[in-house]
Length: 353
Image 1 (cartoon, one colour):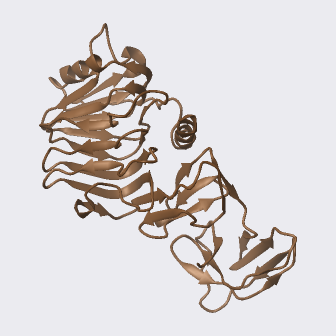
Image 2 (cartoon, rainbow, N blue to C red):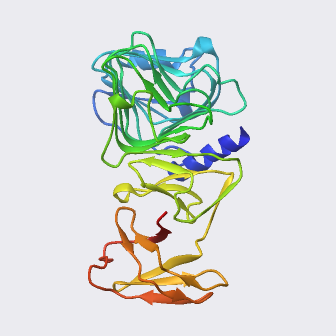
Image 3 (cartoon, rainbow, N blue to C red):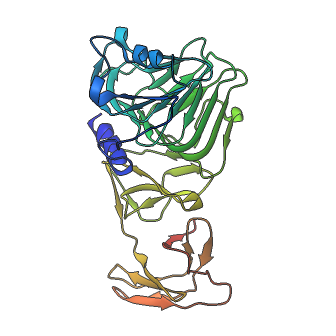
């Protein structure tokens, strides 16, 4: 459990600043609730009551700030969002035991700077991070930020029809190694659309939800599954060992990032693990100059480039067979049909399996 918590903290330390940014909103119909000022309770007044009172005069309530601690079930975050109203969550929240439950017919948005996670060391066997109430028809938009689940599904709606979950950015992580799906959205007519961001799970198939037929993946969105073998693994840079992704072949191990990256549409999303090390490849790209690629042999043996490919994450090019001496470099020049390197910042090698 400690490893899982550290893994999540590594991920979101990279993605999100420890302290949320300061925001100024001048819109007449927007209210801001700051957890740094009020916490989750104001004289035992639950946060949902504070938010709902703001809907009397405002269409949108933005929640910012930082909070961590124990949330008792009788003071849980049970949000009822009326039709035409929106809660934009930009806060960082580490909490125990209880979920954020969504009711009503409005919109809940997880936006830039947001991070919601149950803390490690507690009983999470019966709770997801975000749950729908029995009569909810809330639209859930994830445009940034992140959710980490360590027990059940990160998001669950298994009773309501026609619910929409739209993921266009940010990250959803299911850190439970026995969990089937990060998202359950199984009501009749319900739809999950992934057009950006990342959904991560452990397992052998890159499925984001319990209802693949009602799930679309497009744009720069990606689902990544890690076929976890044990707690202490070492992978070679640029390989896809134990990684399954949807779209296929859109994720790899990165030595520079010490984790999994996805380079679909030149967007990089990182999944870092405290119990995984990534090693430099035996031969690597060290420079790209004037249409030529310089390769270096990192070993004390001769290496042939036969069977190796260069890739920028979307296309690949077979290398000519060149023998590279131990510890030396070789330059492969531009040729007919060669890659145009003028707009490419990174290339790496891999061997087709």
